[in-house]
Length: 153
Ligand SMILES: [Cu+2]
Image (cartoon, rainbow, N blue to C red; front, side, top):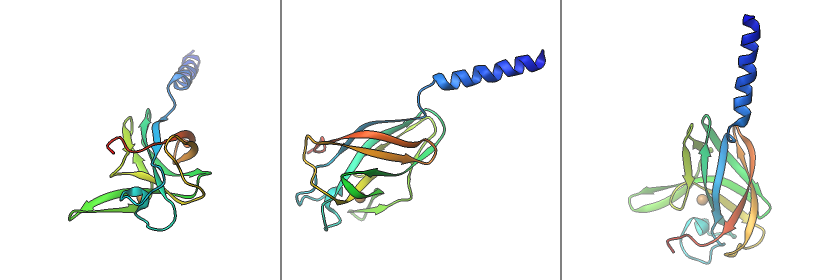
């Protein structure tokens, strides 16, 4: 009888697990049009076309890590962040972007972003493209990315 109850508890907890939201939810993915010479994350490299993807990541479970992404629009996508020091804005590559347990992280201008390098063709406002995000625990998640100018500009 005790064993039977224990088994039922296992089945019930599995059922509850399957009914919850996915562990990672990605929303509001957008990217800058390819740079036209203005300063920003989109053109700090100074060679070739580049852009950056911004989005929100919410975890409904434990912590995770965005390791990188792939997309047909760009041969190389790197995880970057931006640091302000002595009035100068510098961006550099980071080893993944941490997602807090039951929390959110926002990739946005002036902070974390997915850097698109070695782009095959330009992105114009109004375009959309697909990107596949790679998470350490949640695996790969495909998102639709809308190309637009930052809201402030
Ligand atoms: Cu960057």
